[in-house]
Image (cartoon, rainbow, N blue to C red):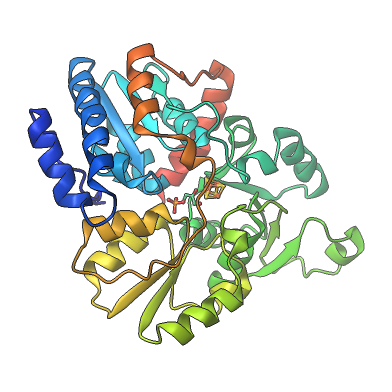
Length: 358
Ligand code: 13P
Ligand code: SF4
């Protein structure tokens, strides 16, 4: 698996500024680049001194994304990097559940998430008690949790998946003969993946009477009700507006968008898939239906590509992680991800399974 390239670590402040200008000058104003370069340089010096690795999710703000991460990527790529790192400290520039996954994969290491407030509406949309209740209601069902869940939920699950391998995990379970697959917490990802793989979908909010009518020998995905507060806001009308204004644009959407939106776009996939597509596939222009820093980051990295800059949907959780916070994270060793041994042990199996199915 390839990680999208972060900048090489520059030796001096001048060099940092030069490299950041080269990437960012058409995306953010120069006075901002100058201020951010000073912080980025301090972070890069400290990072080396402390043998820390910085992982940056594709939704990080451009100045951070293009200056301090050793690796950038989607949830699956960064979990794979976290599972292999030799660094003593992992700084996860992303949201809290991502830091938890890194800790589960590296129980002996210090894992820092620069913002304590970096939550996620999906992770907050389901609890361990919900999973226990679903197992009671659907005995024998295998439970797949999206990686956007907290460790307590993963500990009650059989498998994890990301948007990058949800279809493969589902196919793997069907090939193994599973007929009832609880897939949580994202209603839309569950519905989109079930339809991609050609499996019937049943909402857990539906009645026991309707559930009893499902054929026992056919596979069924049982979905939960949480949604991404960013991706649920994209509408079919938004797609139509882009088509009208930019008829030659290829529209790429994250599968946390509604099935109605997904039916109208050209390409569906994780944030890694979007990076790869914009890098590798020639098109007159690209419109991204996802969190909007992603478009800025791609515009900075691939200046020869024409990105439609119509997005105004920023994830408020990802937005709480800044370069300033990342510097403080290293200086003060904050905020440390702490999980009990029991949760780490139980959550490890579904995460290992997720990493092995790619
Ligand atoms: P990716 O795994 O595609 O990067 O998505 C993470 C996420 O939080 C999407 O909203
Ligand atoms: Fe969670 Fe949505 Fe933000 Fe991703 S974009 S971290 S799914 S709230």
